[in-house]
Image (cartoon, rainbow, N blue to C red; front, side, top):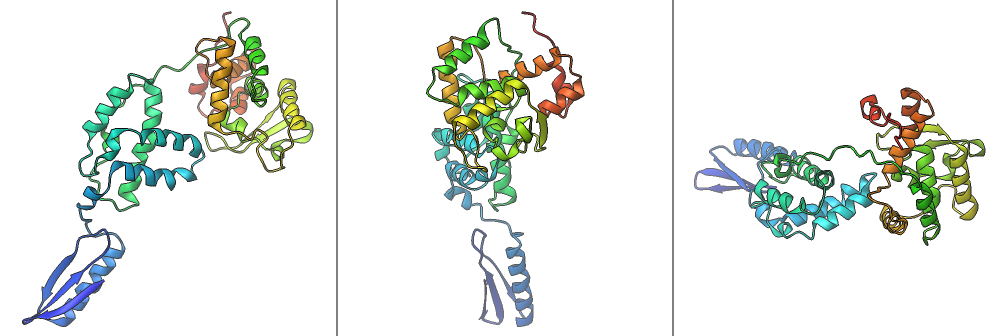
Length: 324
């Protein structure tokens, strides 16, 4: 708020606002002091006053990450996975640095060390929420960060697209290993992925209300592209979904596979090790499924309608058939 005092023959105005520098000015006339005070208060309320750079000394990078995790992150579709990534990042020593001292070189050193244990694509996925975090801090939180250090960081080139498909006997070995796991949702999920090309997140979000009559069709409301799509289900997919609905009692609006992405990931990794399969990711099942659709003779538009691809150029790399 503004404080106006008369000192000697002049009127002194001081305007104070939280997270903004105190500003003052003197006037000969009281009316001029009142007018200026009101205009400065309006500007302060609109966050147009320059923020006090000392605020950056008081906040650490960890403070920023924690706030982003607990607010912005929770409203995202991939909140659970992103929260996991941010919690892991909070264990890094650079989170103790103040925002006034954090720089591109700090993130460059972090990049060089992290790339010793993770792929370029994985590192870029981890970095994405941090880059968004700095943008939000500058544009919405009123934190006087002059530049986004993550946006200025030189990113490693993403790994080439994976083209891993099942080799002879691997699918049967995977299903056999899944039969032995304690997670009884995993085997039907594997079959569904191969039969429908659905992503892991899409499978975990399926609810009973999403099915058409006799389980012949499925509406996928939550997708990576943000556009819902409906697909026809094969006999294999109908059987897998049917086994889930028969074996487990779920509420009409609840996911039919009520487990977290992290629990699913851990179960998948144990199953792949048990099956003794080399370098197989769950997302590779989507590549397998789409390749099978092309092998059945489906056209590019028909496959895109099932897979949800909006860019045919992205889909084209799936169109080769298996050589073995």
